[in-house]
Image (cartoon, rainbow, N blue to C red; front, side, top):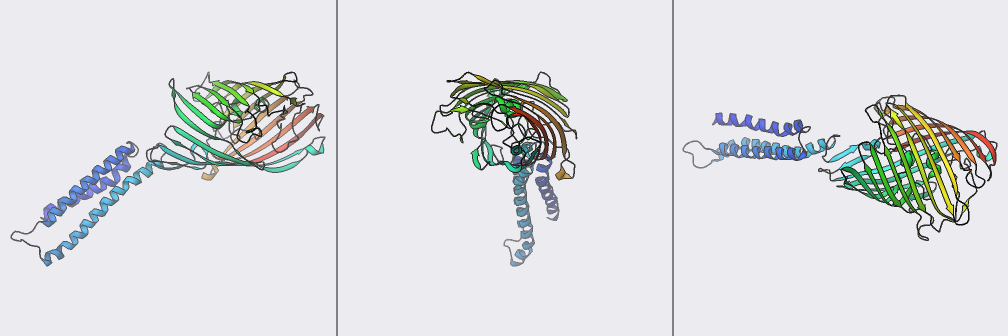
Length: 495
């Protein structure tokens, strides 16, 4: 009897050790389903050993037919041992959840749990055990302080602070179906921004994503990028001048297809939800297409070539067009190139070209945009915008420009401040040219921007922009040649 007991106890201990350690050791080499199957098999083995132990303990001495009170007293320590076995089995079964949670915390796992810092954003991503459901709170906060001086007009020499963007929402997936809801609290208004449904599939062997809702258009490298990701505090002239009536967002449908070194997009969209003409007139409708190609791509970098084109049928609710994008900083509305408004517009179309690339920790990009507007009562007019920019990641990180989408994404910081490091530093410069001379009394303008970006980690950044600008307007409050200097500081967090 004693010999049989002594053999069973080490066996139980070995199984218990295997039940708690084997799944953890295998977590990096097997799937979650295989881990669950292994744990259940080990629990069944422990159940079998427990039954065998109970049978051994119940055996009686020869000639004994009924248990006595003394025997019951002797068996009480065995009952305690059995309770310990039951507790061990329960612990083993609980390890099923522990392993799943541990795998969910791994960047290579499809298990459940929460991950932080996905996609260069500070918020958590919650994920079901099988990866079918995901959800992530979504938002950003951009705080700006600006100052301008040197202009011949005192009303241009102003300073101020503003919340450029304060967004809050959420995004997630249900299998291949995705959703994104985001509201922007800025300029004393609340507006829906990225609010859409998506479906991801394969078309002709290429990953393709379909959008339905209010989405960011695919318009040049910076027009297709979130404002919190571009390397300067203001989008470039090619995008600002060439944008359609309904601007960067619009309600409709979009398709984006991605290859190994290219992407193509096609969209049809109407007014954004906050448009002043929505509900009173037929929407302005924009048909937009864009493509980019990387003729050279390696581990060291890539070359980017791109182009876009749109045609827009303008709503009857739009009685005139007089877009005057800012040329220095977003806060100072007086710093703009002006032209006479275009009455009774019927349609417009725009086109743009992109050429640039990335080489290790250096990037360069030049863009051109042109917009032509037709009117029922006046001649067609054209406006031009061009930009040349370059940047250097001083601390050696790869620039945030994506070869896959041809747009700006988050910078992956090698040595974050939050981990005791210095973060990442980027020095960038840009020259923008605005030409409205194709319109009656159209003006011109240029801006020269020098920027220093400090990425504290993947999701927060401090920006310093110095801009020297000049304008030559023929109409409006600031006519004639004028120049000055502007300074902008931004603090941002994306989550």
